[in-house]
Length: 399
Image (cartoon, rainbow, N blue to C red; front, side):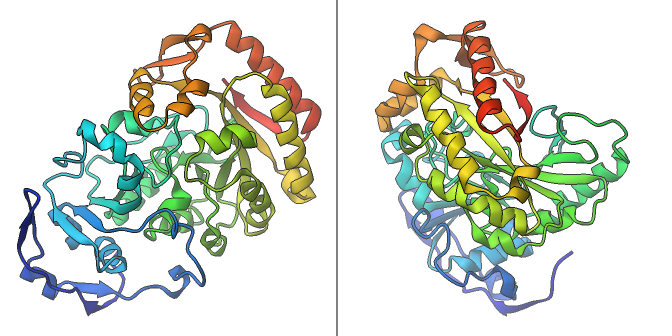
């Protein structure tokens, strides 16, 4: 449902440049801008200030028909607006091999706005019971192992979907149809859990629009459901959302040295650990996403140090509710080739043919994982180290 609005959009002019038509029509004069909600306004430097300075926005024409679309455009009044037929097919952006060298520049300057067409739910049995329709795709961060760029060609800026009202209604109807969760499982003993950030990082998305805030508050009204998302960014705006225990945040962690190499443009590991108590106090359920586990010489000592850092860095309340998921590295030959052109150092750690094999994923993709048997032994060794150093941390699943 649209909120009361006020103000006016700024009209632009026709302009042809770089082979594209950049259009701001007279209709903009008659589209009211929604009044910003005070709680959404940061009181200090935003979490994306160093990561995203939007200079160009690609948008579908229908974006301006949605209040959320107009809100986002109003946040970036000086950005160039490029109208495109589809957020999925942008000439010169997606599929342009020449963009590899500009990988992070594109991430840090480009925003795509679209309307989510397919509102489907995917059954899951690991991080969640269901993967909800995404409100964003892509990310301002640049983790070298991220699977999303495999599907977006040679550039991976964040795409935000503005029809949040339809997405919320779809989730509400789906949860209502499921009814109560009668049998506990490894995802959650009582609630149906919906992953709302499978294709993006919700903590980063929350700094761009109010979509994440709206979803967190939606789940406080659904007695049989919880939201869940993994993040590598500490966005303290989320502490104001009042989740009332109905949103699970999974802070992604790995040892400092590989994180510094692989977790490009993310919050430091120490900062993520230091935030756990605050998010628990704010009403979130906080778990650990120990992912991806990247095997290298000395990985055991590195993880012991990480576990000790977690143990020393969180309080009793956080420890009592702590659980984790353990996910060993999955890589991809196509992403390997892309990474060689912008971050070859990462591939020295990620691409290890002597201990990896090809395997088809649950989604049907052909990926590279640690070899069967070899991986199983190391998963068992990892769980033993975790049990010794964080005995209160329940393992929800490991693979």
